[in-house]
Amino acid sequence: MKRKQEIPKTKEVALTMYLKCALADHEKIDRGRDLAHLYGEKQQLEADMKATRSQYQSRIDGVTGKISMLSDTIRDAAEFRDVQCVQVFDWANKEVYVRRPDTDEIVESRQMRQEELQTEFPIPA
Image 1 (tube, rainbow, N blue to C red):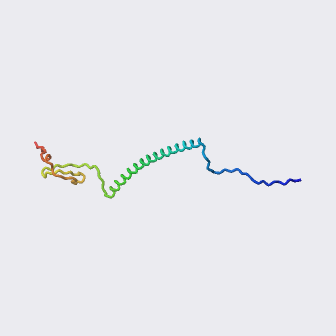
Image 2: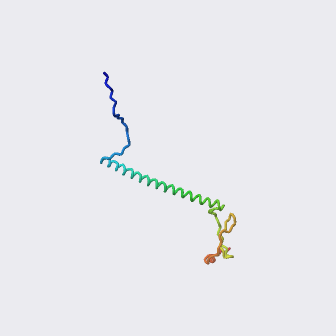
Image 3: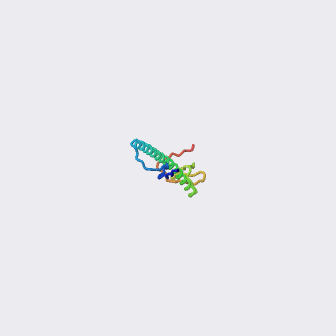
């Protein structure tokens, strides 16, 4: 005679779930060390980032200054340069002036000072 096959009342299947678990004391210590290490690493990275940012900001500021100067030059259609000039002492008019030899432009003029008026003249022989 055949026995009736019993139908199981339960079934078990293995699976993995992400669940909250209490830490043992040694695990707390390990996590604390990990935390301290990561915190130190973060601080170092932030310091490196700040230094790098500062270096780049300095470079950006330098370029910005050059842009500003060149922009002014283009806007004014002129720039300052070293130009060889001649300083002329005109005792007849009691005046000292500076002349650009390339354009003959008088770029500066003033009255002679007292000590300049008393300069010796070369006497022709």
